[in-house]
Length: 149
Image 1: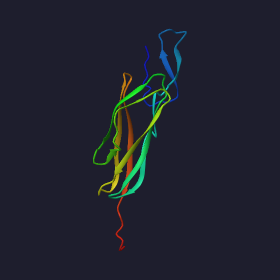
Image 2 (image 1 turned 45 degrees about the horizontal axis):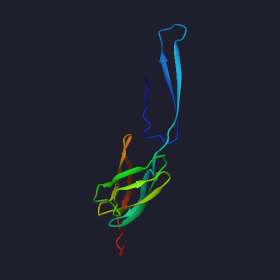
Image 3 (image 1 turned 180 degrees about the vertical axis):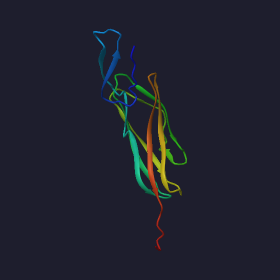
Image 4 (image 1 turned 30 degrees about the vertical axis):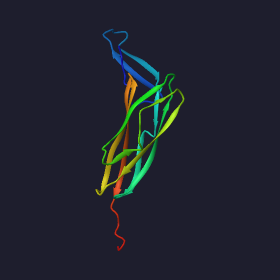
């Protein structure tokens, strides 16, 4: 039996499996595995990049969740980490019918530290094969220039 993870794939997957046999005539046998990965719950963008942002500034981006499957998908919770950096605009559990989409507003508060900051948004679902979906978030916090300089 051969298993592959489709976790980071969103379209077609093509893998080759090489098997060495003890058969002198066969020697090396190559199997080709081809699969079409269907993303049931699509979340775009896959990475939220706030880019350069000044210290103590707030910025907002939008995630769009879309049900590309044939059955309803229940999003049980949406949470952000770290909560000191990221927050959501009052997100309650929701159900997406097939073909339906919904926007989620993500707010970043840069704070007083400089440098790259990272976090994530986690969506928990009722899908057995996709209990959660994680979207990474990043920003580059720059120092505010004094007006006198």
